[in-house]
Image 1 (cartoon, rainbow, N blue to C red):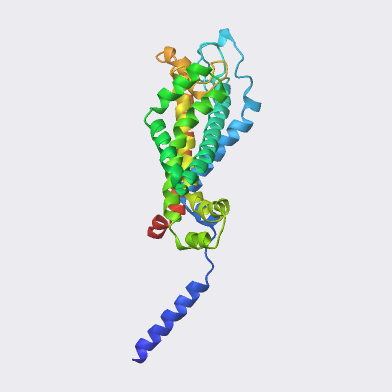
Image 2: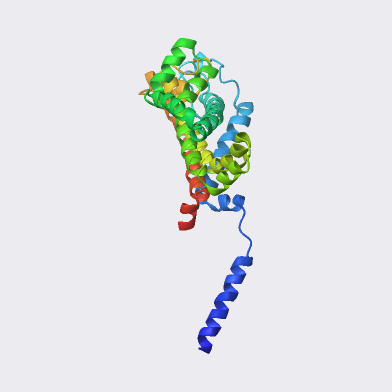
Length: 298
């Protein structure tokens, strides 16, 4: 009996120490995840290259026919293309386009999808209307819809962003709507309604915080998907105009010379793969960190 009492006291002391131990902050939990750390580090490097690199690589538009189709060398680390343009300068400048498209598409899709999803999930009268429109958009392949919109309005950076955003919005709407449908049945939301709280304040105070974690993860996936879609459009000749270097149209221009000069496709392809890998790795890590069920298992 005395031994059992001593073990119980030791367990109580250990429990008290564990309860007194401060909970780690969200920032520490995120950094403790290796996927987030290494993916974020790679992404920071790519962003730094996009922002600072063009100042050291020269003019990506400069044409030098004498240096056309030169293999990688000390003078041209990535080689040159069929017009003698420095491929390193073009790839570094193209990083700005891809990252700008990925960020803009993610921000716009999340913003519009959040508003529509909260309305569809909480206002029952508008639920069917909003979701039928979203279902109609999801029934159209994203690439075909983007090509159609660009063909109608012309190929510009803004047009490409809008064309990629539209197919992404329904996915965000469905995600937010599913969260809202769950949250609006919670006792604290019902108590707020009974207390006469206005709808906008209920959405901002009680519903919106529950959508932050899944939206952060969704934004990372949308960003990676947008960069891939922009490159596909550029490779098909329906994306960014050829005079603006992007990874997609650089590879599109190099496919004719692939057998003679494979580096024209290789280097922008590697840059695109690394960037999308970094974004998706950060998204996977954030999902594991922000999802309490997965974090508890880990």
